[in-house]
Amino acid sequence: MNAQLLERITFNPSQCGGKPCIRNMRIRVTDVLELLANGLTPEQIVTEELPSLELDDITACLLYATIKINHPVFQAA
Image 1 (cartoon, rainbow, N blue to C red):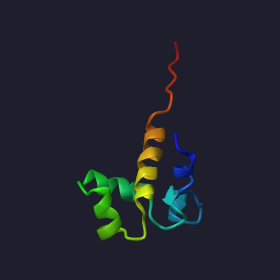
Image 2: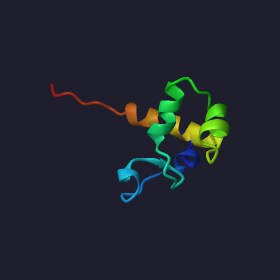
Image 3: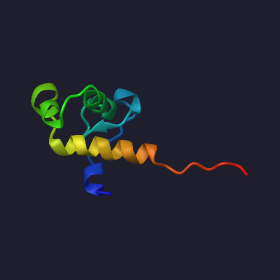
């Protein structure tokens, strides 16, 4: 896991309802993930849709999503 990439993901209770955002901007991780899910490439996102982002921001969003869905699940015996 690249901790430096995860530092790009920020949380601010008074911004975007406390949802995870990118570098304290009002661009949520989910915004980026939705663009990727709709078929845009990372290059298209940073050049056409959200030019204030960098390619490392896209990678950070994917890493964050991976960590969030890959948590341990405990079941009662």
